[in-house]
Length: 256
Image (cartoon, rainbow, N blue to C red):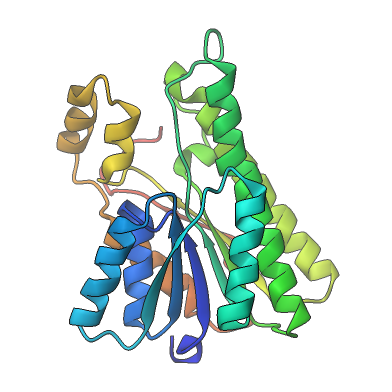
């Protein structure tokens, strides 16, 4: 990770869970981390924690709603003005609503698409443009995907969310192919976690908290730090190594 010291990473959805763990880890490894979310109070607290722990990097909170393209573009303009641009883009932000295909609400489907697919794609595009205009040829775009981006969950409430994660799988591979066609050495990676003990599942089952609790009790789940460690592994690989998709599951987890 030494080659990343002092360089700029954008982490979306950095307020809680996997995003917070990634932002903290990259700051610990000496990077300048821009952590964005709709609510930055938790990122501000995390930034203070990084300072107290004497991390060699920095964590800068930025308020951004990734379902609004104009806010994403403003964020990248601000990063360019304040930090010259990004070298690493971690598309971690994502959301899920329990809206089945047969009777789900269109508005919730659209919100999942706006954040999980469109917002991710806009960030990837703007990150690439940021790197290209500064001749950064060793950058990295990492999409935090899901195991349900590879297998359809046997759970009607999650089918539309699963479709958005299948899109992330396709988009990451498409991004890799387009980067290769331009003869760029910028890398594209998808990291697909299995069951991680965060607030994500709790929010998904907000009206049935006992389901989330039972899932977390059923096996020894991954922790957010496990995914942050996997991301560091991906980032720290030699520049000629391309990790297209990294699937990380709890040892005891059955397929979805």
